[in-house]
Length: 75
Image 1: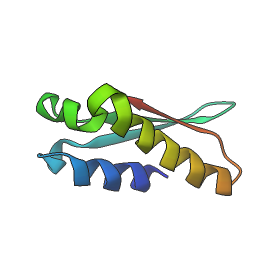
Image 2 (image 1 turned 60 degrees about the horizontal axis):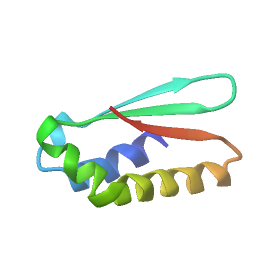
Image 3 (image 1 turned 30 degrees about the horizontal axis):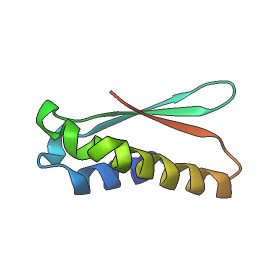
């Protein structure tokens, strides 16, 4: 899952070296924190949050296939 978030984010941003994904396992779900360069934040979020929502949807769909619960936070 972490690699999926990282690959998608790196394909969207101008500076892929600044993409950092941190995985935190909690009791109910796994949280992925996505950090990008400040200049690339708009590209990750998209207009009205559409790209961020699509990213979360894809990751949740992949996690559902493995019977896991995940959350993606953009920091």
